[in-house]
Amino acid sequence: MVALNDGKDESLVLGNSVVPSLTRYPFIQVDRNVLHFPGSNEKWDGLFSRMDALAFEGTGKISALHIGGSHVQGGHLTDKLRYHFSRLNYGLEGERGFVFPYKMAGTNNPRTIEFSWTGNWSGCRSSVSSHQCEWGVSGISTTTADTLASVTVAAHSYDSTYYQFDRVIVYHQGSQGYCVVPQSPVTIHRIDENTVDGYTEFWFSPAVDHFTFNVQADELGGYFSLQGVYLGNNSPGVTYNAIGVNGAATTSYLRCAQFEGQLATLHPDLVIFAIGVNDANVPESDFSREQYEAHYDSIIRMFLKVNPDACFLFVTNNDTYYNKRRPNRNALQVQKAMINLAARYDGAVYDLFDVMGGLGSIDQWVSSGLAAKDKIHFTRKGYELQADLMFDAFRKSFGDYLGKKGS
Image: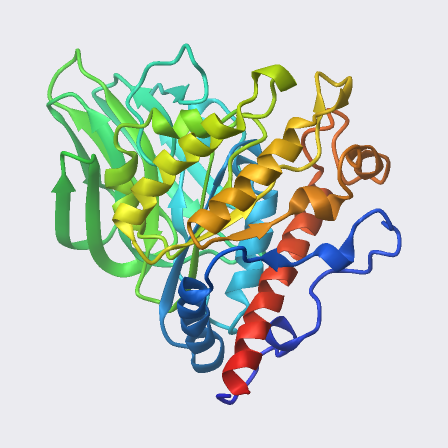
């Protein structure tokens, strides 16, 4: 095994759990907090080999993408997971990656993303059946008809350290006449525009922690839709992209015409699929496991076209109540579907439903202050505990790989 770099925290890789004491929560099934691999491990060995180089040699880049609904949009879960992955090797934060200005679209924003803007903007979500808009990989957009507007973006880590970046991708659609013009005091070295998939990419210097661009048009009567922003640099590390839309189901992302084209710019090596709570929020008689799997098949095909070697981690639904009256038994069908999908695509399963305690366990999470009274969402404390548990399960599998490699 390669020697650790100076300052490296061995506990994150070699054995000590990042999960705080759970003696207060005996209902959590700690012994089941593992990743399950019902298929081949070949792709995962490739991913863990690259993580080995990152953790022990400080080299390489890995792109992760966590996609889901409100659990992802809220940010508490993904911000804590991003923090854990950034500590695989001290100083290797990687790129901040994909962000979306949720406040501009009139919805809740993760605390680590900062946007300010001028002009009038209105939001549109793929998860709302009555909304009919142009969507990209984010599944949400915000649109203006103003001939001059501006957007400023910044992002910081879990400990509030701002990310530095010298490459920005602005994902957008709009009518002819609109253009994106950087306003920040930087020197632009290169601009690439992709009108088919809908994005403009800027390379510049020096690296900054805030970036402002103008959206301007020659005349009235058109529109400009912002679909997201990517903040990049050349630093090694894990880039943890989070894509979530309140209310999103598998069908929501299948409505996004530019999803696959824009996904190619992210080129995810690790995909964490957590779409299912909203699919399952229907009467038992209305939920079809076969149809649910078919929707996932369509989404997965887009990911495989972008990166045939991508590793898929399927996160089962958390325990929820249906209509606040009774535990939602559709979670059991989602659990079976994700095991099937993982076997089909040589993926892994993180069985959150089982780790929580199974059907009806959400009651104990609520009474312990870990879940909200709606019995669907978690509190910030609950989301962050889930992130600790998930990363610990991931770390165990990584440790197993290191042990196998060193034997």
